[in-house]
Amino acid sequence: MIKGLLKLGGFLVRNVVGKTGKTKNLVKSVPTEELFCHKYWKMVKDNGKLTCQGQKSVDLGEYLHSINHHFIHSPYPKMIDEIQPQVGLTPRQIISKTDLDFKRLLPTEEDMHVYRCIGEKPEFFSEYASYKKAFNVKKGDVITMREYAYAAESEAYARNFLPNNKGILYDIEVPKGSKISRYGDIIFPRSSKFECIDTKNIISADENYKLVKLRYLT
Image 1 (cartoon, rainbow, N blue to C red):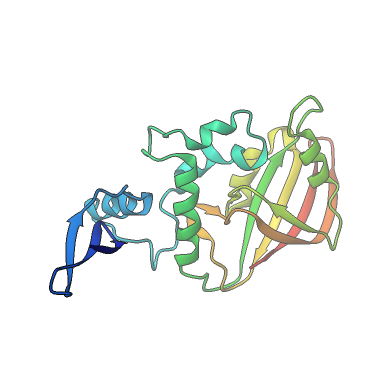
Image 2 (tube, rainbow, N blue to C red):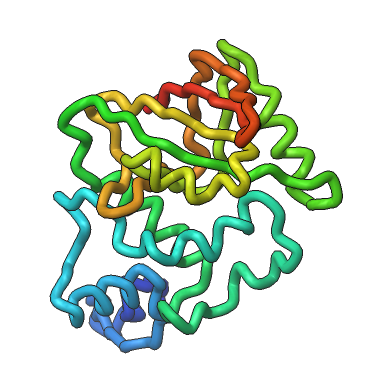
């Protein structure tokens, strides 16, 4: 007679009591769905790279630009579960892996200054309300950047993303010990928080932007 069933890993263990009263374990293999984490580790193993432990940058940094709209304004929310051909993962899977990668990064070895620019948004843009809120930030405010926020170590390079010198220029202090991705682009974890320590309107014949000095809160 069957005493019970127990599923262990990919096996079904059936406890059976025989005529002698002794219990026998009959083990039968049953199919189990392969988890995403299993697929991912197999992929990185096949590519000769087991983990980003001890790295300074996340593996999929070059793809995060294309999924950041899911955190800000996503006109097609169902696309978060559609495979991205260039990487073979869905945005949801990219997010899951990248969040884990950030936790495993080497912390920064010294204080840093990085720069990020947000171009001026017209009133008819869907991002206008969030842009206006960011523009009106005051000293002492704590802001959250919901996306994987990109920045650069070079202010001159960051200014390429400030069309017509109009918008917001962030000057960001990054304290020693921060876990940010730093290889080429600087990338912050999603939903990073920053304290506003100063602001200044820069207005001249050729430019009209707001300089916002932030301190990254680890």
